[in-house]
Length: 81
Image 1 (spheres, helix red, strand yellow):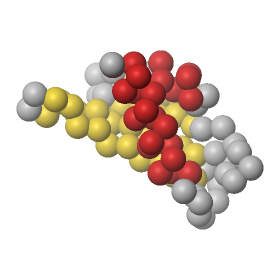
Image 2 (cartoon, helix red, strand yellow):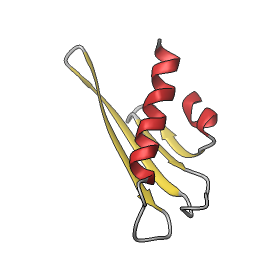
Image 3 (tube, helix red, strand yellow):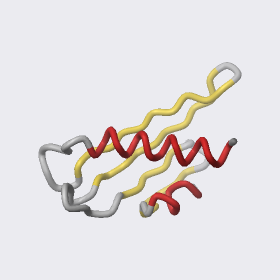
Image 4 (cartoon, helix red, strand yellow):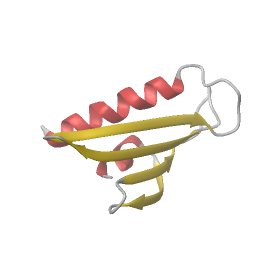
């Protein structure tokens, strides 16, 4: 959850038992912000991650969801490296 703060995202709900995180991103010139849902599940010797990013108040995300995934993974890699 440390990565969320670094990215400037707001934690809405986190459930360690279920491995879920719900957060929102800040509004930008291209977006009213996005709702982010992250789900982590143990799989074999590692962890599977499901990452969903959806616009909060618009139909098109103009690439923001893809950018959110990339930014989150970059921050996560910094924390585990």
